[in-house]
Image 1 (cartoon, rainbow, N blue to C red):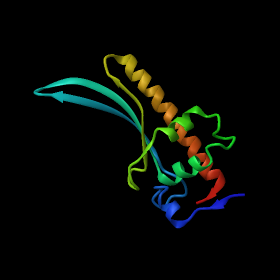
Image 2 (tube, rainbow, N blue to C red):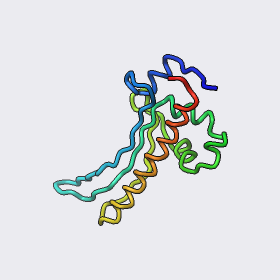
Image 3 (cartoon, rainbow, N blue to C red):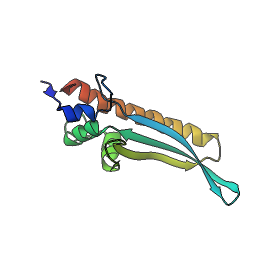
Length: 130
């Protein structure tokens, strides 16, 4: 049986009037500049989970759907709340960009992060009225 979300929970889905949750995963190229030159370049995968999704999944983290899901458990354990506009933020990957293998690795982590977010969103869609 689906449960009803409060107005505040619906607002914190970030869907902007849409019917479901919104979160994001980003692949960032971070250029570090020291003095008058580029010193190093890093690739970073970062995720931002809307507060409602994160908090409801965290509340149900020991349910059969998430209990043995290492990716979800790590996301819940290592995310930091940065306020209603940024939600729960976690860095899934950071490595110096020395060759194309690092890009391939970052893209794989980005895909796994997307899959994890989609699983969390599906839990909201399947279990709560939006």
